[in-house]
Length: 130
Image (cartoon, rainbow, N blue to C red):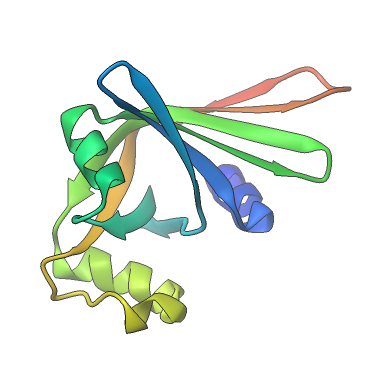
């Protein structure tokens, strides 16, 4: 999982795909964090992406850097603990003007049953499960 975390941090922006009914939805994200040996992302509970994840937690993210990309497929699980939110916000201080670890909107989610596939146009794919 550490390799996945470091690659996504290098990307800075990755894209999260969810489903709304029968319509795929994709949007850019930038938060990626490790807390208690789990890979976390962050959003706001009031956003449509949060509602989509709560309806169907199966998601996929994709990031690209240096001619390679990673796709991470899995389920996202909401973690409402103060400690998890604080850890994320401490890692991304710029978010602290919009979110707080003790507000009702901040949402952190971790990957469960995840498979990451690293690919490029020249090398064979490499898979990591976590």
